[in-house]
Image (cartoon, rainbow, N blue to C red; front, side, top):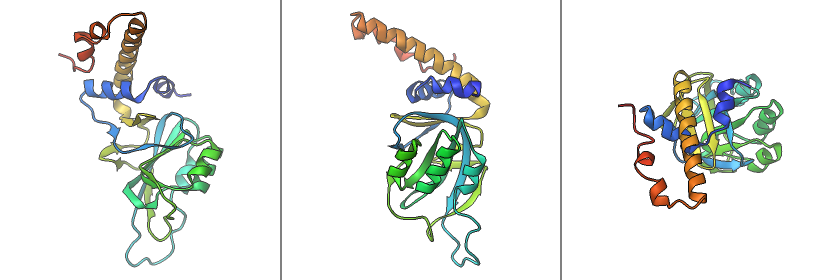
Length: 221
């Protein structure tokens, strides 16, 4: 397992979001929630860009959307589908979920709707999206590109960026800033763990959540 992915997996989205704040970065993708196999996911991004089909298509798509990314992906990788927040049709479906799970893909993030959620759960594939829908992408959305920089919920995502998803949502860490962000997130998580232990030992929460807590996300001065 990649060391950065291993470290990311030990954190939660709250600690990573706080660390991003400290470094002046924005990486939380709003509106996404776990819809299938509801466990955390962590890995490096493999990107897929979707869009509406051309007004006058000259031929049927060469392949179904997402299939090339699935075939190229594996363990410690997260497929990120830029579906422009669309909920009128799915940007991901059941056969893709089964294929991704068979290849050991960590999970899938869809900026928009996904379908066949039961199949994804049966395959054990964590799937984060904004909504579920039974409506197919066929005739409504096509793959424009994969393996290229995309944007999901206003957040840029490049291939190889770190992606973490849990019950709190989804956060993306730029690959070039990953070491700094993870080190800060680890410090925040350790600090909050000590605070939690103090509360459980009987220390008043007003004393625990004092000035030092408020300054956890302050940038370097």
